[in-house]
Length: 197
Image (cartoon, rainbow, N blue to C red; front, side, top):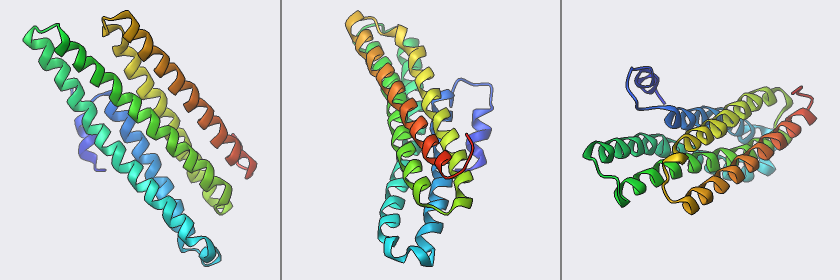
């Protein structure tokens, strides 16, 4: 994660855009979560649980890699849509491009929801002074999840087939509902450690 992405994001061009930004926000959250997990894995009092923390670290790193890939895929999805649109093609190729542009933010949402579960897990076990870092991670993940939801929702009207549009709509609503639940659960766990919501 370097400032070059932020520089690209600020340029007056369509991509990278909101989907990539959502994935990047999730990566920021995972960097904080990784910091907490590493500190806990190294803590002498956690030697008996060190393997468990190290396993969680591997999950965190994998999620971060996934979000980095999805950040790049979001740019490719937009480029594919723009290319197909510019070619004047409005058939199956156009609908496939739209499908890809819907699937990428849905995957970002899924990874953010999974990461929220790890925030709750770590929040229940880490030293109390680290809980505030996890709260920041939680907020970034909530924003990543809802941001990706809005990006997908914006592309939904482009799906021509009514039944496919309904299917995508139901998937998005379900993913958003599950994500909000994971966000609330992580918040409740952190609050139980004495960190005010």
